[in-house]
Image (cartoon, helix red, strand yellow):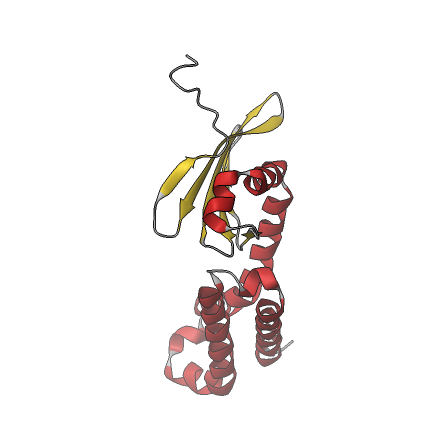
Length: 190
């Protein structure tokens, strides 16, 4: 398979990714959409320029003739094409986790969340997270008809079961609100 054919396949994949961003509501309503679009558009432009000028560039710049130089160029061209599909897979796995589903259920039941975001609370994209052996930290974008923000979820694993310890809402203005789980006992209960 020639370099130009591979490059055309990568451009087609990036174009399909652009269509996904335009058609999947969780993607095109996301706060990360502009970064994703610029990454994909930049990848498409770089691929088209590579196809158009690769022979003249190889003659002028000797680094592309070397194996590692060509590998670096191909990694840079391929990154936008594979970025979105991998990111969607990881986001999908985070959303399916019991930790995330329980946090979303608590969010929808919370009166404070309804007061901040309104009645139509939507989970944005992407759900970000870090997980260790016994602790998980998620950051879930939240949008509603009254406002937007993030839900930070801190969970611990005990006896093989994940349990949400903290669900803290941060609004877009940076104000951190109380834990909606209210797991910390008040001074009267101590």
